[in-house]
Image 1: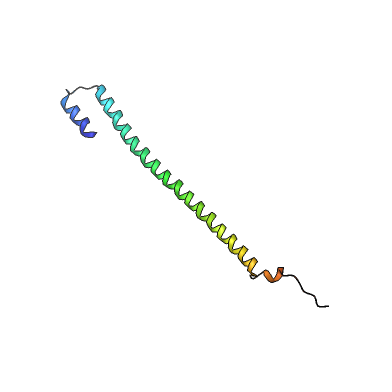
Image 2: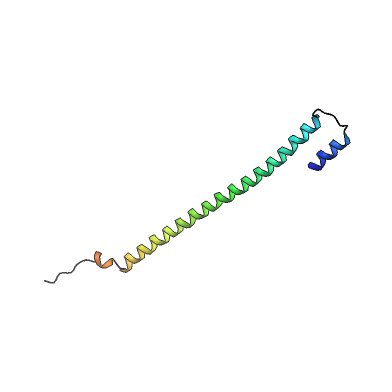
Length: 91
């Protein structure tokens, strides 16, 4: 883009006012730069959103595993099963 601007300016006569080709090429240069910034921003935000989704899925999986462990412990007579066991009385 810069090469195109400089070669165009070298081929045209030297004048003191702004030429329309300068405005056009300057606008094109800005648009190309803005599209590169947009591409970088979208890539960054997309990766960040995916990382958040993965983290949420990992947390949900961990919560389900802990719930399953807690249920297994309570069904197998885990540490607090003695508190919930029925009391036997001798008559």
